[in-house]
Length: 149
Image (cartoon, rainbow, N blue to C red; front, side):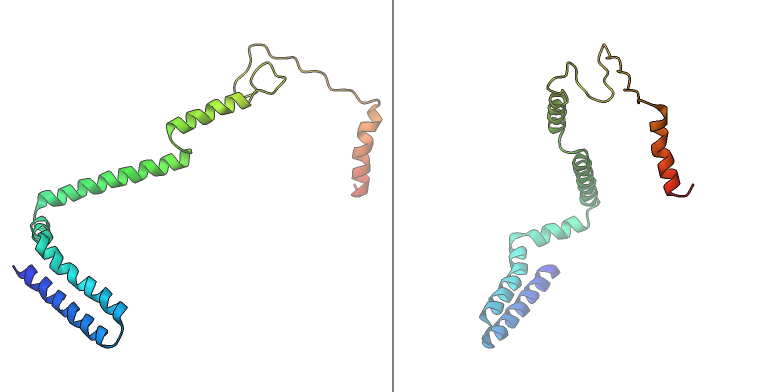
């Protein structure tokens, strides 16, 4: 009963302020103030205020709000992890399949993915040997001389 009286008084005061604002030829602001001031009366008439008053003093209702908050936090956590991983499970699987298809070079006989070794590994070919041992060290010597070592 007290809440309805307070909300009605707030609405009446808001409508008074809207009337003064309209008198000053600020009709757009007056209309906006009138709209805001009618909200409390509308809440009282629909019964939302009564429901809120009963909810405020109910421990079951507060536990319900806690459960809703936990559910919301869990939802946000899963969304954050999903964004960090790069999409949903279906999207990740599709990207993995596409990567497998693209991992094979046009002339290759096996996928070139790291960590996956083919059944038969080709033997590495020996590196071409330099024509003289002096040529390999001549570059190094030139660099050392250049730096004064």
